[in-house]
Figure 1 (cartoon, rainbow, N blue to C red):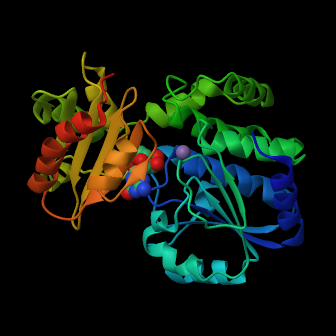
Figure 2 (tube, rainbow, N blue to C red):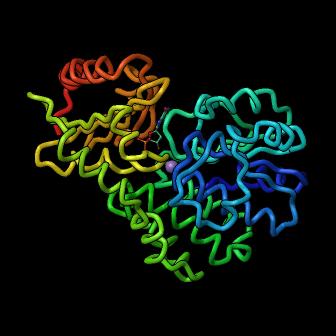
Figure 3 (cartoon, rainbow, N blue to C red):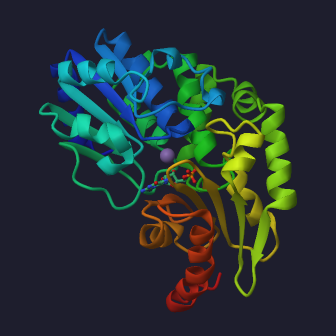
Amino acid sequence: MVNESVLARLKEYVNDSENIVIVPHHNPDGDAIGASLALYGVLQKMEKKVNVVSPNSFPEFLQWMTGADDVINYEDHPSKVKKAVKEAELIFFLDFNGLSRLKSLEKEVANFSGRKVMVDHHPGPEDIADVMISEPEASATCELMYDVINKAGWKHLLDKDLAECIYTGIMTDTGSLSYNSSRPEIYHIVADLVGIGVDKDKVHKLVFHSNSFNRMKLLGHALGQKMYLLDGSPAAYIVLTAEELKRYEFKPGDTEGFVNYPLWIEGISVSALFMEHEDKIKVSLRSRGSFPVNKFSEKFFNGGGHRNAAGGEYYGNLTDAVDAFCRELPLFIKSHNYND
Ligand code: 5GP
Ligand code: MN
């Protein structure tokens, strides 16, 4: 997947740099953290000075990964992050393709004068790096990271723990290989990772079966009391207020995956989750088939993402966010003639 001449420049940048920073997107998920920690481990083995700098914290179900304790969180440690960025010669942007995805960390990297490499699989990249590996066909940034490590001749540095980071990103971005995973290459990569020693059953359990009691209760509440059908459209949505999130002691990552459930209803091909946070409404969108939730999110929710998985934010109250969805979705479907 990764082009040879682009890879040659990436290798040259790494060879020329002693001090490197790796940055995943805001609210980093399994793919962003997996790719960051795999690269972190590989570069450390090359005796580079490396820092992984995240805009904010990441969920507990990803904190078992090797290197996770070393990640510096900008929200909690802004001065450490500033220092790391200031001292770096090279920055890697992983699993995002526009600097706005860094939220408040954006201003710290915007004026960075060293070299920049982006590795990402979202459509519509902005010109944010000197070397851009942008492959919307890839299942996950972790798939691209494997390709980079392999083709760069660094695969011998990939031990079991680092291979598990890569496997995590592939697993979480494809719903355990249930979508976005129809190209044969991905199975060759998984086979190779299992060959290196990845315990895939263990990874699955650590990521998906480590829920708190409250998280399971919140899921029950969301599906039982707060899921609605949008009359006349193939859509369903879940709405969670700040009070409900508080009642179930919401922690980042607790609602991960909730937005997928409405798609399990026969005839439903678009799903949304609305969550009321202090300063904004967080919106998650999923679809099956041709309906581009990324375009819908760009237009109405200041967001973006992939065709079938996107997110965004609404700056206003919860009712208005839900009303906008219910009003605009049927019009959007009608005007674009999506019918599968
Ligand atoms: P989630 O619904 O899991 O938060 O996000 C699903 C996907 O949508 C992410 O992988 C990311 O590509 C995209 N996404 C989520 N939130 C935002 C956002 O605020 N802005 C943009 N541009 N993309 C987002
Ligand atoms: Mn991803």
